[in-house]
Length: 227
Image 1: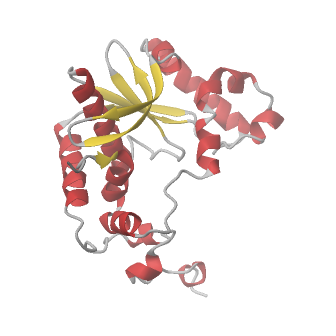
Image 2: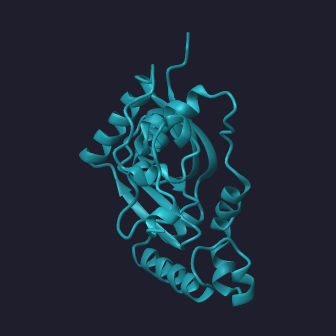
Image 3: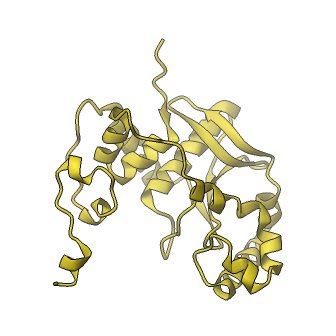
């Protein structure tokens, strides 16, 4: 029987742009493995304590998204906030790491699994928005929560998003709106029998490797400057 479970990465991409997800799934020449720089950023996560003590020159050599001083201040503030909430030790000492979770509808790697209560942690190589988390990452977090809940046969009410390059950690509650976004992404992936409509948000197209094939006209830096 064909496995109809959708990967976390496909759900995340579909939530960002369903048409991009279609091209990734149908092109044979697409490398879907994370690039080395993604792993470099994720490798920051187990080293938060040593990064807080590192001299500025050493921090500057790391793949951080802030100046050394800003990064250390942000990470220290994150640690203090989570210690006050009784969550820091849980996040630093998860029950498991890099777990393949298989749910009813989706499957993928959960970067960290917390216990008591059961909660997944998604480690993102990017930067967070000013508030909350990006929609695509929210969908990824819900997928991870649902897969763990299905495997362990217990409810999962919250997930976490870590942004090691920015020194930021945010919680993601399993709200009705987030679950609806997850179901929308799941439906979009399962219905990919042809290229979906193009996204209306052309800013997403600027760095997309499929822009030419998709047929969108992106604005160059020169045009944006009026040159």
